[in-house]
Image (cartoon, rainbow, N blue to C red; front, side):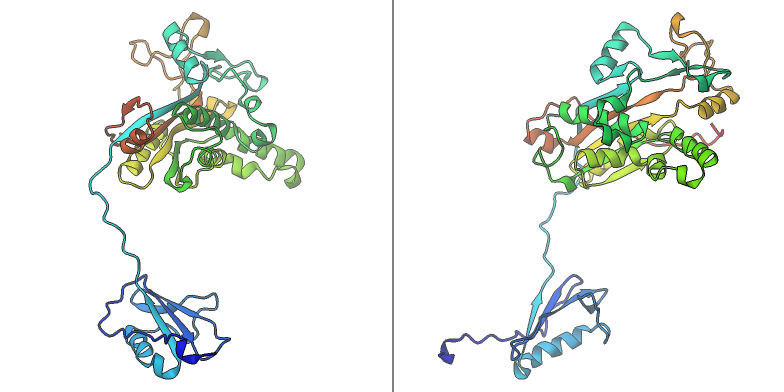
Length: 366
């Protein structure tokens, strides 16, 4: 071997180099063929060894690193400094946000077409609750979805979701397709899954799961309670299931602010897109609270409207003789995206989400 043709590798001096947090330093014992490279990362003004074992000697200072580099060639070591990458400057200012997809599961049916046709025809979707569990209730009417959502999903998938999550997944799928994206989710649509988010509002999600779990506990003991009880009870299950179903690994947030939950969830998604956190978001709300306990509670508050659904909608909030609201269930989801993202792929734009606001009544418990 001709030693003369082997290039001489030396360690550059680091005197005068301005270090920043995020910089990396690589050191190697060059005269030892079995030596392993040691990496240091600068955090909070000090250099920490980047390994599972950590650094028993503690962090090193900038002066220590400069001394290592200065003495490296003499002692048979190699020292390499890797500055933290500098990100390209991004355009300042807020981005415009547009709506490109719609999805809904409502008491008027499954799909936005059913909702729209029902509204044009003057149908209301409010029904009498005929189940045995509602017998004796002072108010027995509610806006219930006329189709079992579990029957529209794969059996194993539906079993792991509460009713509200089932509504949300169906509405999200419709909105996703309506926006022009491919069935299956982000991967099939050629999107970066980390740049897509979910923002859904929910008050309770599905109170019946927790009630059912408590009943099984009393009747059968601890072994009678399903391990799915807790994940199917939390309000965040709808957002989680939509993320799983469409392979979305960006933000998955749940907003709980009573009747304003879905609206606020949409507003928060608008802001996340507007300021560059994500490019696309599915936003809306999902709820399934037509249960005996909830109905009884609202009735005790004297908050529920009464009347015969056959005589027309019992819900008339702006009439002089209004007597309350009608409890209901379902889901509504929008696909939101930045305008430049939508224009670049030639998407149909329904409208612009120009802004939103948030305030509190702060005068009454309801």
